[in-house]
Length: 85
Image 1 (cartoon, rainbow, N blue to C red):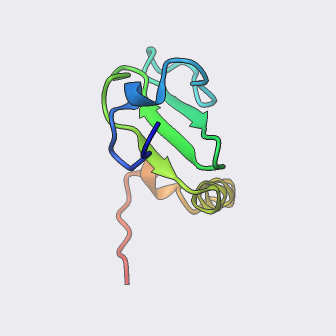
Image 2: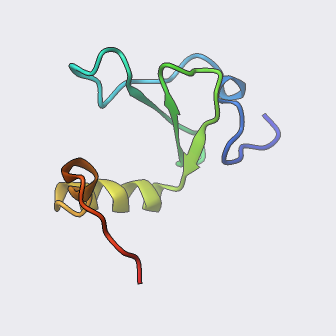
Image 3: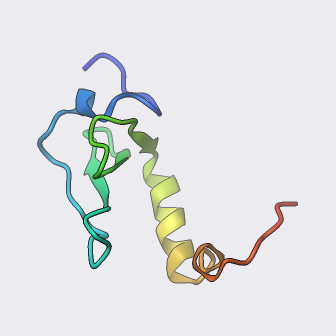
């Protein structure tokens, strides 16, 4: 593959290697993840496997997961708004 970029068609990354680490009782709508050879992580929506892949660096994924574990993303579930400064 010549170039991996944010928003590229997820199918361009191939069909092998995608996993559903966040699946559950959500009616089959899952986030799928793939670790790329250079250490970045691609995410896609399982209900739209031909749609865009979001590409994150290792540091970005690590920061998000640590923040989510610390409760920093709870506002997404609670329906409250948060302002960015």
